[in-house]
Image (tube, rainbow, N blue to C red; front, side):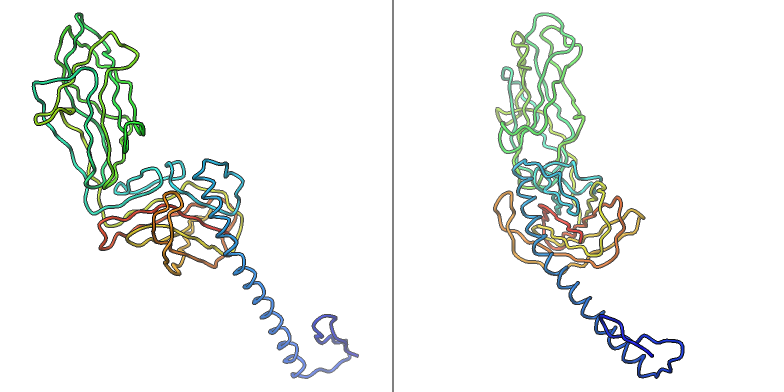
Length: 340
């Protein structure tokens, strides 16, 4: 004689039982309802985790900006772009400064101020505000040695600062070879690592006598029309309508749901994850709302993304694609990706 299962009361037949089609239909209805309820509960559980995960991302990002340790994350990827350590590759048009990536419609080119017959002792600077994105690659200037004998390896500091002279972003202890006694020397110097310049930001290029050699005077020539550093600051202009950044690979656990957020101003952003098998998973942009840049307190936009798909365990990298649209400038300040 047939019996029923303990929890869902499904039919259990013995060999001598006869059974009806309605018995199967009844069982299928019970199973369908049970599976539906289980899926609904799972969906509610995942949905409830997303705001909690967002709060964790916010806290981790704030700790990152405060230079606190954030290495204990496992199912969270984020970057606030204080440096480029988390970036594996980026488009040439995408320039970086501490706390942001920037894409503009115009680029900053060379700044040439000419050379006068006047000079100043040991220290000259030229300040400027970038009129577009660019990369400072080198500088040309002229100096007069005030040393009474030839000097091989004349000591010069070449410094690039952002905003003010205290915020040094590039420093080179340079040695000019074969400088004759009281010689006038034209220097063409190329930076080992180009310096990214962002549209609208202020910079200062300083040439000075190396502080460790006070006995030598470095007479630097001024520009043709002012008393500041003369010569040419070489800048490669960088501009574009679209650019991309790919993160370094991170080891992630297997998951089935992704939730992500990107803070930015101007343009639009797309997000994808490349998993350990090389499969690219494009996340869906859900909505864009007003937000605040956690580092500066300035207003910006925040676009939320989601994806439901099986992602295998292993190394994975995130790609941000920026599209400037009609905006003259687009900036990305941070991103966070939660794996559930």
